[in-house]
Image: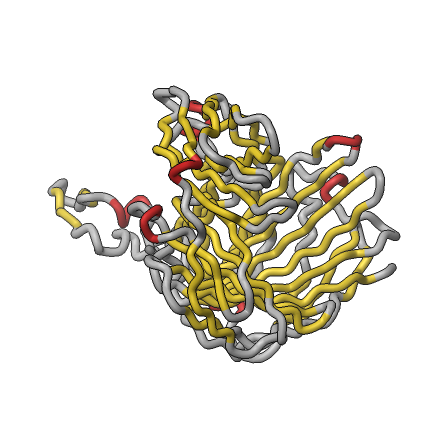
Length: 423
């Protein structure tokens, strides 16, 4: 969306004539002196944390810098408030970078994390990167597993957390404020194969109260026929239930059959997520996702392999990678690309990630991309740089989607190349 300068935005521009009369200039007219109306460009935003969630549940933010690039121009700091950073760009192609304050992890390892996003104003102008926030979990989902658990272990799953045990039936799961499903899964003896699954009543953590997960009400997972087209001879098959941004009741299947939570346990908003992975080689793998409103016979195929050469590394003010990314050969209407590189040792772990929309990359053959040097942006820290002299692990991924919405029938194809470059 284009907006205009102060004169162009005025409801009425008033000009005093030589004889002292006042004339009304239409809002869309150019300034009276004939100078052009300034084009302020299109606003882009990057959300790095939810101020409402932090106010409600607490948590920690550790954003070091947020910067943007207008076309091929220089990287500049963005201004932000309450977790939302804003800038205006005139070029349809733009980039946004988010870097986290390097932190000490358990064991004393220092972690650095930098993400760069490239897109076009025609595709999206509102981005989100929550990698520099640790959400609070001030609530607790408490209860007990009752009934016949069988001879194996069991899990209680809720609010993105899993409580796995073999003996203690009572559980306490940390959670944010909200309403969450609660699943119980009992496994066959000495295996991770589900024997039965039960869905307890949802829990509203703002209200509290214990929940009983009654395994006497549990039912066996239901098998469905699966046809896998292409890929390796022995793909890996699994399913889970997607509810909101959370996944529950993961189950492994076979190349000809997948297991699912029975339809009687599904609720409004649930989707069965069928996930199949094929490994073409040690350095190349592909996966396919299919979202189902109701489980049933399914067919899975794969995208063409995304074969990418290892990046070249250039040592300047810091060590930076350059990739050659092939484009084209896709079958779905929505396509994203990304690559990541990392170095690690006993003292530091650093990761650089870049994500691209298909509109930003274009379709005219391979695109050469060099990771930007952000060391001149306010907030930069040398702990955000790759470790010099260390092996660099890398991966490049292409994701094709039938739709960006999480709806029944959604297909997602992923293909990844990976490897290690030694200095």
